[in-house]
Image (cartoon, rainbow, N blue to C red; front, side):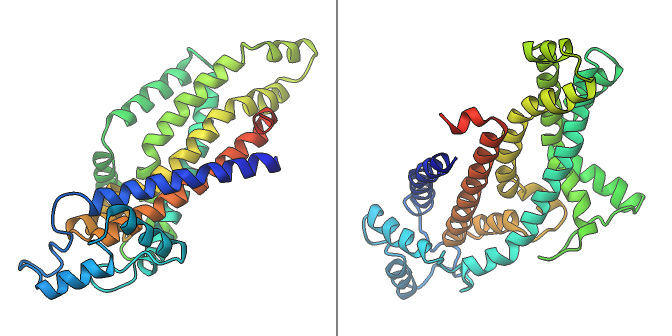
Amino acid sequence: MGKYIVRRLLQMIPVIIFSTFLIYAMVFAMPGDPTAGKCGERPCPPAYIAAFNEKYHLNDPLPVQYGYYAANVLQGDLGENQFGRPVAEELGERFQVTAKLGLMALVFEGVLGIAAGVLAGLRKGGFIDNLVLVSTLFVISVPVFVIGTVLQYTIGLNLEWLPPLARGTNPEFKALILPAIVLGSTSLAYIARLMRTNIAENLKSDYVRTARAKGLKPGRIIGIHTLRNSMIPVVTFMGYDFGALLGGAIVTEGIFSIQGVGGYIFEGIRHRDGVAVVGAVTALVIVYLLVNLLVDLLYGALDPRISND
């Protein structure tokens, strides 16, 4: 397992370098004025443009620019946004609510998705199976902003069971329940269908027939042997999905007025704040890769043969 961890860590280094370089190039090497929008509707003064280019080394070749930027990132410096505030400081405030929202969505989709998938897989072709297939297909087909608006109007405004909005960078737990349900709804449907397929296939495998022939109890066969093997692709999906939840919550955060990382990236794009966008996306890439590393380790724990490859 130690060699497995070291190998995964070494594999992350070129991925981080390539992905952050691509993000930096897409923002600062594309045609256009990187200072556009920083001085309101009017063009920025030549002195400001010169100071900006000097500060971020935009007059140097692209590899040199990225080298300076990467060196600052290693020191925890992601630059300053157009308002003069450190990007790392603002991300630290906003990442807490986004991480909390992502974890709540992950728990919601994991618990309900796995439970629904297991029930459907054990009763393949029955009423519960058909109900899960139809309901998950409906959830997958409906856009997230439609689900969010409908739940916000019905549960938040009409029934008043949960707060319809979650303003600020530190909303209370109750205010994040509804956004978490919306954010994890599509992934819940995929997890349920994936779990249902894995359970149904593993129940036909040789090791299950052998366990039954040995006289093991059905609860042990399903709860330990079948469920463990069926969880491997589901855990992989949930790990990758958590990274996607952190960066893909722009729509959900916008609907519920959550001041998280997604909203920060959206505001950065809207105000043409390249430093803020690059810093936020770079931070998300690093977090996403760390989560994937954790998933790989858990994957190896579920199936020890993987860590020995």
